Amino acid sequence: MDAQKSIEDKFSKIHPCFPVNTRIAIVGAGPSGISAAYALSNLGYNNVIVIEKHHSVGGMCESVDIEGKIYDLGGQVLAANSAPTIFHLAKETGSELVELGSHKLALIDSQTGNYQDNKVADDYVSVISLTLELQDKAKDSGRIGVHAVSDIASDMTPSFLDSRGFKSVPKSVAYGYTASGYGFVQDMPYAYIHEFTRTSMAGKIRRFKDGYTSLWKKVSESLPITVMCQTEVLSVRRDTSGVKIDVKNSSGDFKSMEFDKVILSGAFPYRNGKIYRSPSSISADPENEVLELSELEKELFSKVQTIDYYTTVLKIKGLEHMPVGFYYFEEFMDDPETIGNPVAMQRFYSNSNIFLFWSYGNLANVEGSTVLQLAIDAVKRIGGEVEMIVLQRRFKYFPHVNSQGKDYYTESTTCLSCQKLTLEFRGS
Image (tube, rainbow, N blue to C red; front, side, top):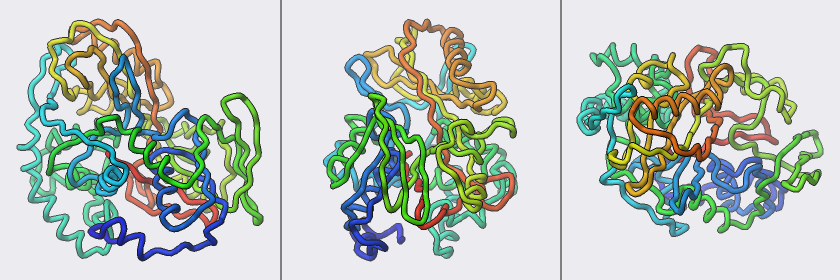
C-alpha cells in the first residue's frame, strides 16, 4: 500500500477475501495482534477472537504502574516520521501524547558514572545526505519500508559506510538503534540502519501520557472483537476443516476452540527459529512448540532470529543527581561480546528513584539472572545502591528476517499459508 495515503484511503481500496462471518483467531494481543484485529474489523469481519496469555494487551508496548507512576517497559517513544499509523490510532482513540523536550540523551561511563551529552543533532546531520540519497532511490523501487532499500543497502553496516567515507556509524544513530532492541549495528545490513535513521531524524519525540499500553487497550476496546487475556495457547491443530486451538485460562481450566482461520502474532514458540547472538545449537523454545509446521513453514521460520531483550527495573539510591533521561553505556554498546551488560539506563521521573536498564541476552549462558546481576554491578560502579529489584521482563523480539540464506538479514514478507499469517506492526 502507498505509504503516503491516509489510513481511510488504504482501507477503502481493500475488500474481504473470505465471508465476513469467518471465525478468525488471533494468537497474541501485542501491537501486531491488535492491529490485525483493527484491520479485520475495518474490513467488516465480525467474528474475531484475540487470545493473549498475559493479563493485558500491549505485548512489547507494556506499561506498568510503579509507586503511582507509569513506566513503559518496551516500546515507548514516537518520532514525527516513525509511526504514522500509530499517530492515526492515537488520534482515533483520543490517546494523549506528551513531548519529551527536556529528556537528556547522554553517554555514561560504566566505571565512574560520569556522563556527557550525546550530540544527537550533529550526528544525524552527518548522515542526512546519505539518507536522502537512499530515499530518492527507494522511490523508484515501488516498495515501502526496509524492503525499498533492501537491494541497494544490503551490505553490512560497517562496510557499507566505509565505502561511502564514514569511519563508523554516528553514535546517536548506532546507540539509539541498539538501545531500541534491534541488535548491534555491526551485525546489521545498512538497510535497517537507514530505515531507523529515516524515521527518527526529524521532529519532536513524544510518549503516551498514560503509557503505551493505554493506546492498545483503547484500540481493542473500540473494536467489535473478543479479547481473552490470561489465556495460554497449548496447541494449534490445522486440517482441511479448519483450526482447533486448545487453551488454558488463569484458573487452570482447559478449553478447545474451533476456528476457520488463525493469525499468529508476535514471538510464538517454534522449533526452527534461532536466538540472536546465541550458540547455533540453541533454538527458540524447542520444548514449548505448540504448532506443527508444514515444510514451507519450517523453511520460513528457520530464517527468523528472535532477540532476547530484557528490561530490568531497579529502585536505586545515590543517583538522585542524575537528570531525567536516557544514558547509553558506551563500552557495552560498542562491543557485542559484552552481551548481558546493560546497553542503556533510563530515569523517567525526577522525583522518583526508579531506573530502567536495557540489556540483551542469548538464551544460553546469558539469561535473566545474569542480566540482573550485571545491571546491579553497573549500579555499584557508577555510585548507586540497589534498594529493591522491582521487576524484570524478557521480550522475544524479531524485527529482522533472513530471506536469502545469507548470514545477514533482509526483510521478507512471511506469507505462510491461507490458514496462517505472521504479522509485524510496531511503534519504536
